[in-house]
Structure formats: C-alpha cells, structure tokens
Length: 111
Length: 113
Image (tube, rainbow over all chains, first blue to last red; front, side, top):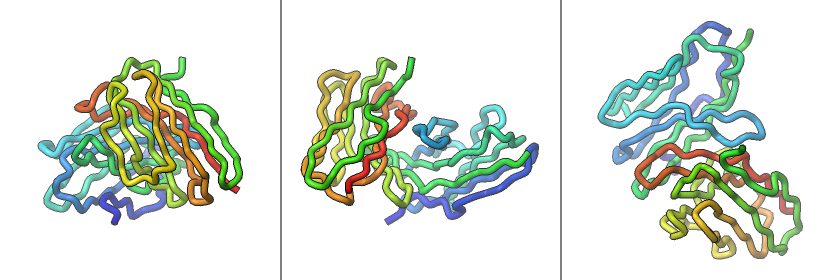
C-alpha cells in the first residue's frame, strides 16, 4: 500500500529551465512533508520541507507547494543546474515520527 | 568529518550467515534510525532509537536486531540471512523525535547469495 507516490520515474530538463517534481499521497493524516535529494552511492540529503498548515515554502532555487485538498505536493527548481541531477524523494511524516518515502524521481539536467 | 558513517559499505555473504552493520553519528543527535531500500527503491523505516531506547519497531523479522550502545551508535545485526535481505541499508539520525529532518549515512549494500 503506497501511501506516497511519485508517478514519474524520471524527468529530463534543460539547464536554466524549471524542473517540477510531483508527489501524491493518500493519507490525510500526514501533516509534514519533506524532499530529499540522493546522488549515487550516497545517502539521501534533506532539501526542503513544508508543514500542512502552509501551502508554499521557498529556499533559494527550491520551492515546495502543497495542495492539501488534492493531496499533492510539488518541488520546483528554478533555474535547474547540471548539479541538480539526482534522485529526488518525497517523504511524508507519519505518527511516531516515521517518514514514509515515495519511490523517487530521477532528474537529469542537460547542459 | 563525516556526519553519519556506516561500515561496511558493501557486504556480500551467503544465506544462513549472521552479519552486522555499524553506524555512528558525530552530530550529537538523540535519535537514530535504520531504513531498508528494497529493489523497488522504496526507503522503509525499520527501527528508531532515542537516547538508546527503542521507539520505533516496524514489522521486521526477529532475525533483525538493532543495538545502541550509546546515543552516537546504532548497529544492526542480522541472523540467518536470507536472499530477500539483499538491499541497501541506510542509517540516519535526527536531533530529536520532534525535529523531522533526518541525516542519512551513505548506505550499506548487502548482497546475500
């Protein structure tokens, strides 16, 4: 039972353009969401998060949008850079401080 | 000055063996976790310790036993290894149970033959 879904396995974007990574969730009890970035042979690195009381959080080139009614969040990267090429995981916080991860989206930024 | 380190990075072993993976964090965090990334790439939490006490124990076979000698270390011991245990195991830590940012180690790729 996948409670956090990232339906796009991969995304390819030109350098300088916007990257939009999407995430859907099924459990309305989730109240905190995080995005992690992962390079090959490394562990995931925290990128940005958002509480369910907000609909937007911004940190430099990274912005996360949350649409609670649609149970959907997205990560926008503007402008995209080749160094952003990585796997991006969406995660939601369950009771007991447990993170539930999506399967990840591979982002390739072409120069 | 690695924040969360794991050893070994790669582990190849035969079915039926017992093995351990070690994790250390130098961030001064109170909470540590073990995750398993399976073949479908999902990261799933297995265990969590807060100040050496077990606080999360997901539905994991009894063959898996975490041990936390102090709050900077969380080791994972696996008995009677099975083919299905092949995966990448990640250790993580966070400042406390109410701080949701978790810092991950580089992972240990376990292959059971």
